Amino acid sequence: MASLRFLTAGESHGKALSGVLEGLPANLALSSADIDAELKRRQSGFGRGGRMKIESDHAEILSGVRWGRTIGSPISLRIENRDHKNWAEGMSEDARFSGSIPPVTKPRPGHADLAGAIKYHQHDIRNILERSSARETAMRVALGAVAKRFLSELGIRVGSYVIQIGRVQSSKFKVQSSEEELLEILEKAETSPVRCPDADASGKMMSFIEGAMKEGNSVGGVFEVFVTGVPAGVGSHIQWDRKLDGRLAQALMSIQAIKAVEVGLGFEMSGRAGSEVMDEIFYEDSDKLKDEGSSSRDLLSKKGFYRKTNNAGGIEGGMSNGMPITVRAGMKPIPTLRRPLNSVDMVSKEPFEAAYERSDVCAVPAASVVGEAMTALVIADALIEKFGGDSMEEVLRNFTAYLEYVRNF
Image (spheres, rainbow, N blue to C red):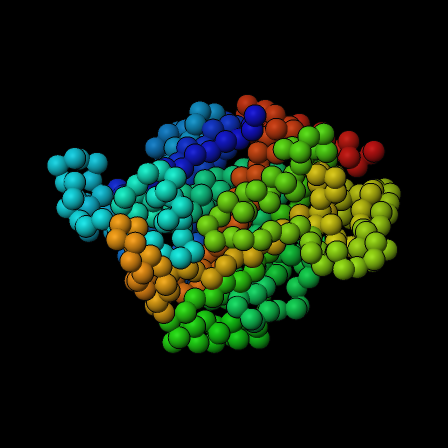
């Protein structure tokens, strides 16, 4: 059973999104401001749709926090849907308002519409599309923000950046082996409208998105998420469902519109010789580092065993190996298009051209922030699983002792 577990609830135009996070230790400093900063990042990005002009997400902490610190009980959050006022009767729980808006019977290609209607025996697709909407990811980002706060207390950072939108790809940023380089890349990505740290590619990506807007089309892309500061030995090779890379892949694939995930070099590895992609192991005595004036955390977490390359993406045999963890996700183009696509009405069985509803043209930058949240939740779960502790003080004692053990192994 997972040590840290969460659930989300709510519909796109319902009253609110809600979420519950259970398993976080007591005494972690946490505020709504910590969460809202991540929600704002999710709502940014060139190519977003009209919904972002309506919503300005704020997370209300309903439980699990007292006087600015977690108390060990489940944390529950609420994000109001400001657009709900326009759907009060159409999305009401009250049977009196049944039929106040017409049913949706025309499934859109690329969405959950038809498969969901068949599965749940629904003749109004709105009962499917409201929950399958990517609006749900706002709560994932909120819960991921809490996980990030926990990880930051352990000196662990989670970040992301976009490396491809449509046919425009940046070749500057391959799998990195340096924590410092990754944090510098993140800093650059945060200033880009498309979250791409390559200024030249960033401009070309924006032009590509503008072209898609004019054509009534949409575009997808690829983003990379990284985690720095995770020591070797998190995760396990013992069973399939305990492997860290498997857990991360499942988490990222669960994000709406994500169709591919790879760790480290991923698919590129399959076309290379083994001698080109295996990360060779080296050792450096920590006493030498001490003489060079390295920080206490460097002494604890980085040496003696280390790698000069990171083709494995920081994970070997389902376990972290002490290098930065890097995972990459491919997002399909948004399936809601101004350019009509062919479909068939569920009731009449007559063909039609799918109607356009308010939508993004490109949501890859936002998806990268969602990817960070899901990654943070998985890493936090794996760390709590390994180090235990009902309070932050206990977790930190266990974690620090383990870092010392790794250094002296």
